[in-house]
Length: 152
Image (cartoon, rainbow, N blue to C red; front, top):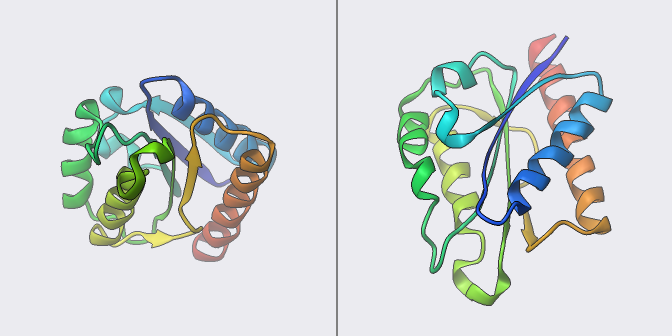
């Protein structure tokens, strides 16, 4: 059975909701899922799963979540070869060029750590609506398909 670990950082609750949607979708696809808040997560524990997902917000003009900086730094130093990853996040389009840049930063951190992208990044404006839920369900399905090919 595939395993997944979904980590989230949230200020408004939107990214916890994004993470919950991804977790539900992965569970419905037969994956054993762990979900944790980023400041309560150690990268060593995160690495025990086949599928790794980060759902995090971007603060102000492109700032990453303060509570996730240690996790972000540790992630870049990890060896994640053989792992499949995905990054999603809720942000506010009001910030223009800084909209959801944390999603991009985590995507780069996973690449640097040698992980394999399982799905395109998902960037959501504010809270997830019906079409966002569909995107997140598709995101989860792609992650499972990619991990199934690598793991088996």
